[in-house]
Length: 475
Ligand code: B12
Ligand code: SF4
Picture (cartoon, rainbow, N blue to C red):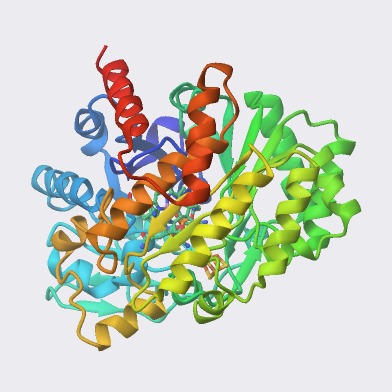
């Protein structure tokens, strides 16, 4: 088969915030045999006119694949899928990703432009789907999908067991314009994911439901070979590891860090760390990570109250968070410690503990930040299942899920007074403890006083700074 005879597979990343590389599409696109299929990734965040770019390939395509998170991306994904179906009614439209993993059948029932939804890990499933489309064979034996049969009925196949990541082909970043992402990000930062799933059981997270507390990862040597080749090719200066829990196995992480040092790969890296896993690293092992370029960690704390952490089934002790913070401060590693407030029935003591913990962490290093989110009942989580049982009404249709982002809102369990307090607290924490700028010194001093006394009345500095920022954005 010549290159021109290859069948086209179009993959679409809907409009979203930030410019993380479309790792899901890269993963499923790289899994296909490049001798037989030409994969075209169209990312609405990058393309000036995504629909025009899609149309260009539509008549030669054998499948249109879409990746979709719950929330706003759904709206754009529906619009584009409908256009594709109108233009070419026979072209199979496949949706995969977190939303269809959580709502296999409902997504198909609600939207007639979608033919197949994929659940969980997609690489093997997509290979089998594309083979079936190109041979016009049946979908009944493909695990991990839900599809509409010829009678229009929705059929859910058996689930697919997680496949070890080492069995997959390496990711082909040439499927995207890497330089364009570097430009949009404003830095030569490569996104990469080295593991799938998670062993833990946090009750606010969908991972336990989607991956059934299973985990698989690329082995250290394969990962190092891949990173070395990618570094040579793209000259990235920073690696953004998107794994849910990168530090799952201490030996693996240390071997990779040591490999980066030995191979003299000159880049920094950032990853997510569970505090229990971080605290099990010896100081020497932590130092090896630092030497290999570890520059920033994201350590989910969620609450300043141990009782609340236990209720969330985080399986993390506060002392472990404190130890990780001390290490980061000592070795000048930046850290983001996200918190969540506004869980259903959260006590005032728990909220206060979170407020104090965030302040204490900020005091430890100007490279620490403590974003505070408001709890939103994302689907597929144990807490959401519980609130639904006690009568909480979740969105019912795919279109309603598209409106489910609450960006900028306080979520269902935070009243207006608390919301105002936290919006001010977050602002003053950031102002007071972020890197010191000489000019801002008096304002930072004042902001510190405000945070310590929790007094945010008459927030004149906030208004002035926000107004100045708005003017800057306009000009
Ligand atoms: C990068 C990222 C983002 C990026 C999105 C980039 C993009 N492409 O649009 C940004 C920063 C914008 C983002 C935002 C948010 N995110 Co986010 N994010 C991630 C993260 C860290 C990595 C995603 C990724 O690239 N994974 C790597 C790829 C290879 O895995 P994957 O996406 O699961 O894809 C596999 C399968 O799902 C499947 N598949 C996926 N798509 C398709 C398509 C087809 C056709 C097929 C066949 C298969 C398939 O095959 C792939 C390979 O196995 C994940 C956690 C994680 N590690 O996955 C959270 C995660 C997806 N985010 C999550 C959440 C909650 C959010 C936010 C709400 C956070 C917040 N508080 O604001 C927001 C809002 C999302 C929105 N509505 O827009 C949740 C999922 C929620 C949900 N139900 O959708 C996750 C799982 C984190 C978590 N454990 O809670 N996020
Ligand atoms: S929050 Fe993190 S550690 Fe907890 S279940 Fe989700 S992915 Fe795993």
